[in-house]
Image (cartoon, rainbow, N blue to C red):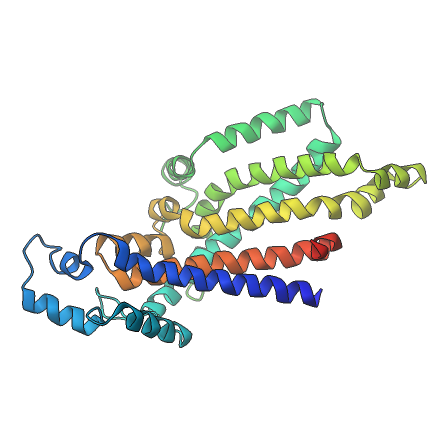
Length: 317
């Protein structure tokens, strides 16, 4: 187990280094001078002296190898630079907004697992029956609705028509826990609808596959009750692929909650990225992309480790 963990951690470290290098190179590969683009955001031609001063201040007048070495040195110290827009540290701005996006993803994932795994198991046990067909049709419908459309419908029905919850906004948990959780409910539910449909289908598929294995037939031949067979021999072996899909979906949500956060006015990372792109704040864009990619890699590392715990054969692969 330790050797597997070390091997996977080394791969993750190499991938993070490659992402950091790619993020650095983007600034130098894209056409045009980023300093001129930034200083001409109001449509006027920038003063050459101002351009030269800004390039010197950002270190862009130095050789590429010197800039790269300085960039890696700053990353090693946890320094992602300073924002062009408000002159705040990029890491500080990210630290303010990242927990909100992670909370939204965690809430949506929790709802999806609570709904998806039991219903997927039920569909597998009732294969071919009316409940299996009903769940199949429901998941197809849920997957066909874009999240931003579902979010808009939630606002229309539950906030404007029924007036059960606020249309959107954000209240810190420390100020009012009830208001915070109430505002979190609709955006997380909007994400969880499609996510839970994926979990239902994956759980059903993997459970049906495990039910055909020899050890399951042997357990049944020994006279074990069906519930015990499912709990001890089926569910644990079926959770590996479900866990993998869950990790991938959580990773995609790190950058895929833009419209949901916008619809519900949730101040997370996605809206922050949109603001940084619109204002051409290159340090913030680089910092957000780097942090998001790093979290995605680390999340997949955690999923791999958990998968190896559920299935020891994974450690030998």
